[in-house]
Length: 129
Image (cartoon, one colour):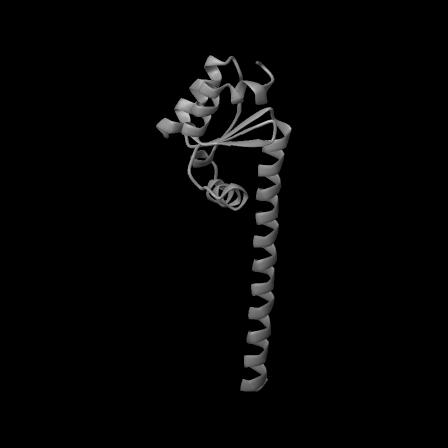
């Protein structure tokens, strides 16, 4: 095999590897996106959180006081937490935590949640008012 042929084989192999890598990333990305959509629309309340975040703890406490049990996704405890956070950024324009969804509707972060409670909007969305 000549040098040109060997270079061509190496280049073709590299392209095959690159295509496989891109396809794998696309599949992972779509499965993360599907997980996020499923979490939001299959649960009455979903909180994307980090276990150590005081604002996340406040959001969870608010629901506890309302006797509601949210589905909580602790991003820092998952291997795909960063990817989930990127999906949420694409969806709502924010990458901070917590991000709270009720009945598929984006409520926002901790301050937004607190304001929704004080105004009675959260109770309306929950159907408890």
